[in-house]
Length: 571
Image 1: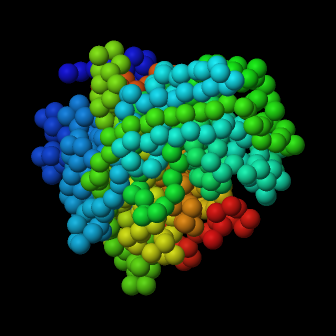
Image 2: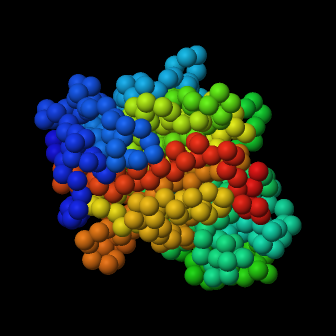
């Protein structure tokens, strides 16, 4: 059944016709068979091979926006049921990606000579009967699952009950390098911590990196720090401003099964890690004569101290718990240099999305066309182009499609802890996640590249391709910490994503920003993130071409890239 996204998209001028590759001379133009079948099946075998070797991309068979389009179409089809983790649709996606990598000539890089790295996870889905209650001086308040709160017990037990006194801890941050401590030495053992996501606002680039969100502002850090300090539960107050996305995104992400790395015996865990809406927080705080705006203002002061609210919180969190069978997909194309082939470039993209969930307008399949069938499609096209090179670059390349990104980067986190190639010999991770098929790109976003000594090279290649490098339009959203390259960065690998364009050729100024807002507000993590037949994939071809040239140059450099001295991720 064809479904509509409701997003007005007009093809931009200058893009290649359907079936034509980017940057090719007429003699090497390629057209996919007119069968309506994905190139992943019979069609891909009929595609022309590359005609000449790098470095002139226009003469080597090129990067095809049409192939990227067809991979995206298949991976986001209803047949794959939203590519959920540990279910049939996700397994089909992993099999498809492995098959395409094999057809590209990439060799298995997973467990026991396979294309798969098993990722042992536990799936936890909070039951709709979950309750969260608060009381103060005999006055009680009950919150409604989904409408008022969402979350999960990290105990990995099918039934968890907890009770504790609520303590407001501002943003829940302890950052000595910024001389900021929301805890001020207060013992919060056994408490229920209430806090805001994000971090204290500032335009000072030396204070929490100015507008750019640091890891301290991410919800993952909040829960980690709460657990380190012995808290019983941690509840984030959601506001669209502090989270950078609406409640629907939180509810759709947290109101379903979530993957977790299996707890070791005796390991501690939060009885509840969750969110409450701004409205619910207002009613919660009104029990003691407080309000959301007042506490948000207090949380932005450096002399803030934790506030015992005088509210008792009780929760009952029943859950479905199961062992998840899921896999990263990994394939390698060896390098040509006898010594440097033991060092690796990684191209990565997550294959999972949200699967089947709460229906919206009668549609329960969260297809994830943009997020992240697009990134996987680029990964596969890069593998095809790399595999077709008559002579390979000096270093090897690992194509890595990871699972469970939507559940908190779990697949890439597992890979970083159990790498298939040595971390110390990994030159870079170039990640692709959620790119916009809205015409010919005028720029490229590579947030995080400036943290490394690769940035001058990244600038040179952008100039070569007539692309501007755009600044992150929403640094306060913390995109650098929300995709799989971050897992690699945490173990020392220079890593960043090659992101979607913010401006498009032939479109009015501000088109990209407006379209981005519309996507985030109406389609991000919604069933309406679906493939559309009138999408123009030129920008995705450009992003792949950019990643190709950047990866190729890194693969042939004499020395491994590094983080810039002083950066938080410096080796």
